[in-house]
Amino acid sequence: MPTFEDEFRRFFPIARILGRASLLGKKLVVRGAENFVRDGPSIIVGNHCGSFKDVAVIALTAPRPFFFTANKMIFSREELRFLVRKHLKRHLGRFGLFLNFLLNPLYALFIQLISSNVAKVGTVPVDLYNHGKRQAVERCQDYLKMGRSIVALQGRGRVVPEDPNPYVKSFGRGMSIVAYNVYERFGMSVPVTPLAIYGTQLPFLIPGKVLVNVGKPMFIADHLGGGMKASVDRFKAAMEATVNMLFLELIRRRPGPRALPGGPLPPYSSVDTSHGRVASRRLVP
Image 1 (spheres, rainbow, N blue to C red):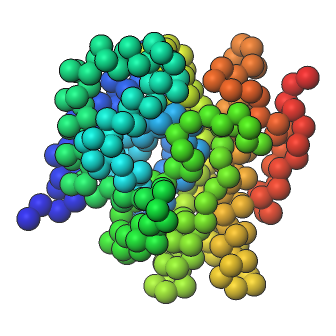
Image 2: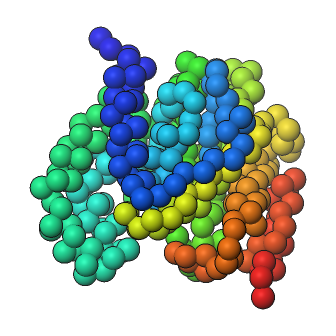
């Protein structure tokens, strides 16, 4: 019986083609690619502001096969079709519904391809609505024990204007718990690579740049103290603060106007990664 790795290698060329198609019209620029962990167990965490386009970015930049956590709805053809329609309507309004109707025969093949292969390549389903995250945590721990790489993007795949940083949602505790558990139970100090993504919030086919900033790996061992809850919360805060910092570096290095399409400018100017605290001051007047 083929392993997940066998299935992934078979599907990977198709995934890269789909990734390029998802980013059609956009130029991908990656900074810090040398920080990706190339061997052994690892976790990749980052912001999630661009729906399926964020997954495409990882597929085109990660140097090795990876297993990602994903909304369990993409495992069902009908529910994935609903998500695509919802995405188009959110970003394009009535025109999105018209586009959904117009392109339905074409993207039906895309939906069939994704929903029928996503489980085969070891994707970890996460039930976002019925509190089924414990099983996902256990699956991730099992994958790390096998030396695999896991991707866990934080957020619902869109810009949320009312959040403190519309592009970087507050992190969940899941990956921090995973890192803590494998360290305490199995003595594994798993590197957690933080990254920030900007540009995927632009609608499909709208030209622009997609910027990725990859930070140096982080370790739960550097944040231990005061028991499990304190250690998990401290590491979660440090990961979130680091991704915010990486995101700010992307924005500050952008050429041209500093106004951000797709949402308001995040109100961050500096980040204290030791405690996850962020200063609240706008970058520009």
